[in-house]
Image (cartoon, rainbow, N blue to C red):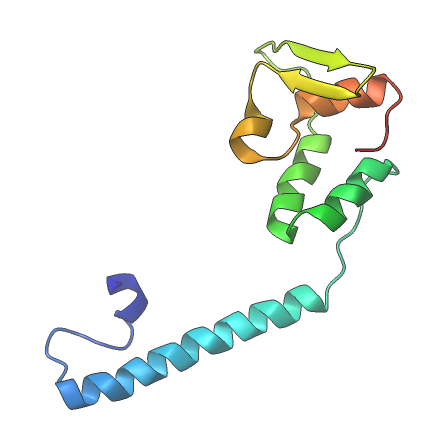
Length: 123
């Protein structure tokens, strides 16, 4: 809360002044939120691959989570650590020993690369 009010209030603020400053604080926060929403609604996310799974993720995730997903799609470089990815073709499901999907809710590069190598370009 200190961070939230620091620009508008201090320890010597009178109660009558507090109410006025509190209202200004809320208005300021509302305006910042409105600006962010405007930017989000009026900007278009660019797909970086031709894989349909990227487009599906764009429609399924929030923009912030989608960006994390998109970053994972572009990290198909060799890592120092190795992970075990299990792929079950009959149900087209994957699991990875990193457990990042269970932890964050997005498929990470370890599973994505297996799906792409197996010719599955859709989630």
